[in-house]
Length: 206
Image 1 (cartoon, rainbow, N blue to C red):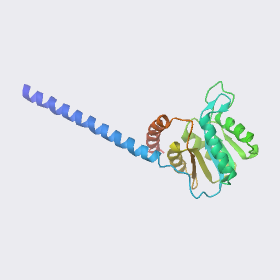
Image 2: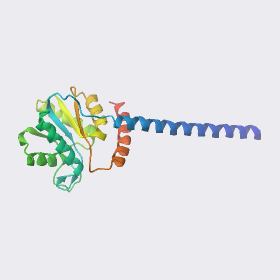
Image 3: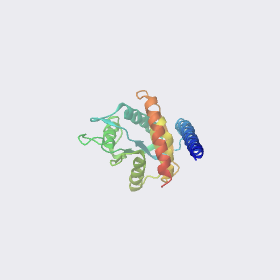
Image 4: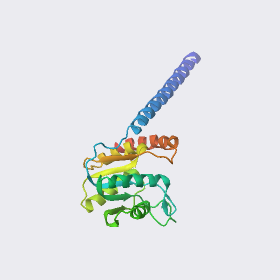
């Protein structure tokens, strides 16, 4: 009986070790796949003129857009000046309860200060995630009679953003991505692997 019991315990340990190794290998494989997808995002070329440039929000630093958000805004300005779209939808809610402006409001102020007419900038002030950015921005677009969009963000964020836009039924969404000179890619790409994994799980329930 003791020998049988020992054999069972031994088999159970082998099974648990094998299962653990399999999970680790699967996890590492998925991380490699996700990292490859994250790095695959590129600006749509050629870009067909769209109704709106949808700028996905990023943190405010007090009353001003953070350096990373300014990069997205500056790139959006380049696209607008090149004729890629005719209106802006700026998307992002309130970062901190004591902040004066939402991300969207901070973006509108920045764009207006750089010569964009305020009447072509539409605000989406409620979102707290990329999924909500695009869900709520689509509602704003429908209310304002805008049908086509360029989704504007950083390159490490582009793959998830365009997948979400397609899943939400944006009509042939285009992608405009910029690189960053002010953010740590080790930090943000690592975080994006987790965010992209979470998105793929969310996608199953949509």
